[in-house]
Image (tube, rainbow, N blue to C red):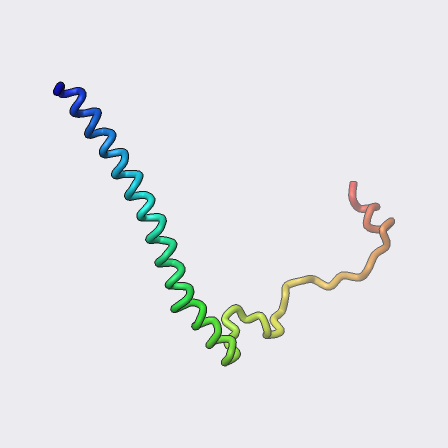
Length: 82
């Protein structure tokens, strides 16, 4: 058995192990993220909704920052665009 033949076998083994490791990592990540959502995030959102939590402050009447301007006709709007 030559040294180059031995290296090529080791290289093939290394590639197979790397592919198996990546497949295992994808599976593990999917399982862990699913469990985190089902056991933590989902129930927390449901409890928050039951108690009326508004974490994004969507219900309050906040000042929007829009500037009120008088309505103009289409002709008036186009006169200044040029």
